[in-house]
Length: 62
Image (tube, rainbow, N blue to C red; front, side, top):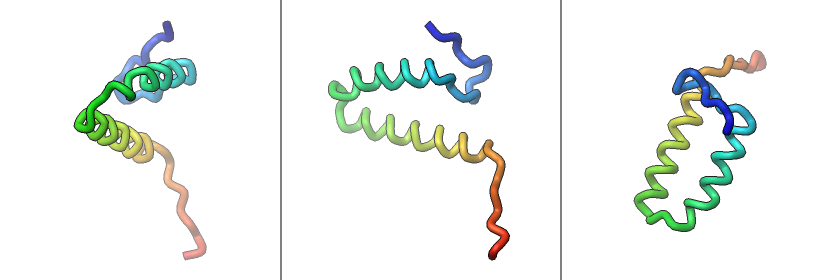
């Protein structure tokens, strides 16, 4: 089993992301609509947090 990141907001390693993907593929067909909405909200928030931690690239043409 892959080692978990030391901090909740650390990015997943590739093996951790693959393990999570496989688990989700097993679980998603059994979820109800409200579970899927909660999952979508959680994934959206995680993506937003990840983007906010990345360096900004500004378009100098503006």
